[in-house]
Amino acid sequence: MNNKTIAQMAGVSLSTVSKIINNYSDVSEETRNRVLEIMRKNGYTPTPSLKKSNLIVVIFAGKQNVDFTHPFFSEVLNSFKKQMGSLGYDLLFLTNTKGGDEESDYLLRCQAYQVAGCIIISGQDLEPSIDALDQSDIPCLGVDIKLTGKNSGHIMSDNYKLTSKVVEHFYLKGYRDLGYIGSSTLSSISNIRESGYRDAMEALGLTINPDWFVNGSDFFEQSGYDAMKQILQAETLPRAIFAASDLLAIGAMRAIEEHNLKIPDDIAIIGCDDIEACKYVQPSLTTMRQNKEKLGILSALMLYDLINNQSSMSSFVVEPELVIRNSCGNHSGSYGLYSEMQG
Image (cartoon, rainbow, N blue to C red):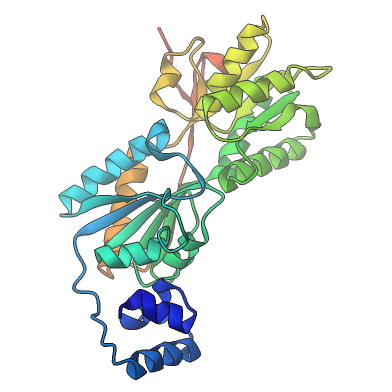
C-alpha cells in the first residue's frame, strides 16, 4: 500500500494525503480524520518528508507562459540565479507539460523534492495547482503575479503607473489619437496596463477609439504584428501606439513599415520592458524600462527572507522608467524623463 492507494480509497488527491502526512494546516479536520482512519484500518504507516533541501523551484506559471524565450523574464531569472547561488541555493525547473492532474500538481512535486522555496513567474490562464502551492506552507515568491499565501510574497513593476507615464509622454509630445496593443485578455499584467492606459487617457479628456485597441494572443512579436495589421485596417489611424511589451512593439513596427508608413512621423510607438533589442531596431524603440537586474536580486532576497522567517514583507513594487529613443521623441525635453540618444 502507498500514498496513491490511500488517496483513491479516501476520494482525495495525492497532494492532500501528502499534506496530512506532513502535518500541513490547510486540510479540513473532517478530511484529515477520514484519511488517518483509513491509514489506521489498513495498517499503513507513512514516512513524512525529510529536512528541506537547498533547492529553489522555478515555475513558469500558466497554460500559456513566457519560459526561456522571453528576453525580459530571462534577464530577471539570470539575476535571480546569481543571487540565489551566492546564498547557497540551487535551482530546479518544473515543467507543466506532463499529462494528468496528479502529475501536474506543483505542490505534490515540490514536496517530493523537499524544496526550500519556489519562484513563480507570471503566465496566462493559471493552473489551479498554482493556487494550491501558493496557499501551502512552502515559501513562494511571485514575479509579476500576486500571491496571497501566508508564506508567499510577490514583486512587480507598477504596471498601472507605468501606462500613465506613457500617456503623459504622448500628450506632452502633442499626440492625442492613441492606440494600444496588448497581450491575451487572460493576462492580468496586460489587463492592468490597458486599464491604466484608458484611465490616463480619460483623465486628460482623450477619446478612446475601440478600433485602435487590440489584444493579441501573447507578448511576442507575431502577436504585435497581427494586432497592428488589424489597427491599420481601421477607417482612421492612431497617431501613437503603446504596446504592452517590446516584442509586441517590434512586431507592430514591422507592420507599420510594411504599410509604407514612417515611425514616428506617421505613427509613434512605445514598448515596455527595455529588452536589449530596443537599442538596435530602426528606429530605436522608446520604452518603459523595468529594472530586470534589480527585480531578480530583490526576488532572491525576498524569497530568502521568507524561507528563513527573516521578514514579514509580502510585496514590493519597482518603479518603472521611461527611456526615450527615436520611435517616440529622441530628447528628454524639460520634464525629467530619461533619454538615451542613439548615435
